[in-house]
Each structure stands twice: as structure tokens, then as C-alpha cells.
Image (cartoon, rainbow, N blue to C red; front, side, top):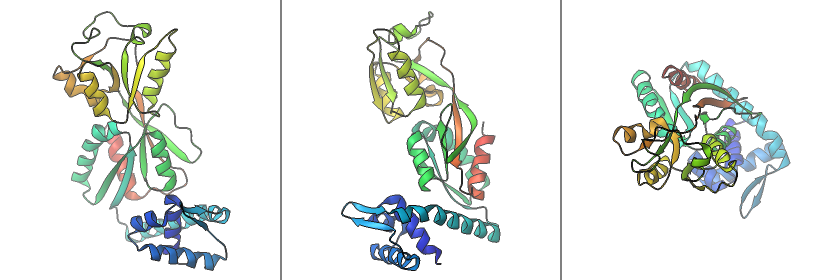
Length: 291
């Protein structure tokens, strides 16, 4: 069997669109159609229902998908064993805060020692990273989570990310020696990161647990947006220290003396069943050694 057909099949199953699959594979859409028809003819079963909204995988297709991924994984291992090459492209998913703070230094150091390894970053929260690992779009992912309990994704803690509760320098809570309690914080406006950010979700839970609390909570998908609102004196935010340290040093932000908030673990995640290529292993080693 031509593994190109399996590659086209798994890509179409992931994207759900002939157009998207063709663009990702750098093929004409007609070629994707021919590949799928050839595979269906060879296997004697229909793999996709063609709908106006896209390609919907059939039950036969779902049964084939896991086996096809196993075959492609085995082929990738054979190629790596055959040429002994370390290089290649590694796509890493991570929260936007890590993409803008921790990872650039890791990638720069890796580029100096292993220029043949090409790292691509994909900014996403936990749900997006897990979906990317499942679909094969991501090779590795970093999760800011205490635990990551998924049957098909395995993870291990590789670092801890300190968090900082911050406000504008003119805010009433700036520079206070006496620590604010949860009841006082629940009366403030907060700019949190998007749903699915573990430490933002936990902060929201604690604020809403205060009896009679009515905190105004605004969610952003961007650290820059939340930080800018806080710098303007509009409220408070809980952000990774690395993303606000420069602003603290410049006096554009101030730390809030409040309840103790634990550092959040950085977990390195990968698909449980998929092989980790040498280039991805090299990135993982560089990440661990950067702690």
C-alpha cells in the first residue's frame, strides 16, 4: 500500500476538509480526491461522506484511522533509524505566556547547538494543545496545569512558573504592607486569561467563592491585553512573573500583597501512542536543561 494515500487520509480525517487537506499537503484538491478514492477502492469501503460542509469520516474510516497512524509512525521510525538524522521540524504548542517568555531563550540556545532542528511554535491553551497532539498537528506541548489527566496524552512536570498578582502603580492596593484578603480582592476588577487557563480559572473560583462577591472579571486571550489594562490602572491581573518582570522593574506595574498563590507547573506533554522523533527529543532535553 502506498503510504502517501495513508498520509492524505489521516490529514483529511484531521482537517475535515478537502481544501484544507490539499493546502496542508501542498497538493491539488483533485489529487487529494484521487488519493482517497484510490484508498477506498483498495480497501473496499467508504472512508468519508462528502457533505457540503466538508468530509465526514465514516465508521469504517474511524476504525482505519488508528491503524493508519500506527503505520505512518512506524515508517517515520524506520526512516529515522535508516539515516540517523537528528534534524527536522518540531511543532510545539504552548500557552501564549510561555511563547513570549520562556521558550524564545530555549529555542535560541537550541539553534546555537543544533541548527538542524527547526522549532515551530503554536500558541494555544490546554484544550488546543491536547487537540493538537491528538490530531498530529503538534509534536509536543507545554501545559500550565497541576495535572493533565487524558487517556491518550502523557505529561511530566519539567519546571514551575512563578505567578505575580499585579496592579497599576497608582492603584490603592499598590505598595500596601498589609496583605489583602480574598474578600478585599473580590471587590476589585480583574483581567484574566481565557477560559482553560488553569491559574486564571482557579483565581476566578476563589473570588466567586467569597460570600456576596461580585467581582468584575474580563477574560482575554492575550497576556499583552491583560497587562495593558492593568498598567492603565483598570484593575488587577494574575500573570506569569516572566511576563511582567520588566514592567515591575520599570515601575509600570506593582505587585499586590495578597494571599499566597502557588507557582504553576509547566508540564511537557506528548501523545501516548506516537513515537517521539529525535529532533523532538532534543528539544525536550533542551527545555529541561534550561530550568
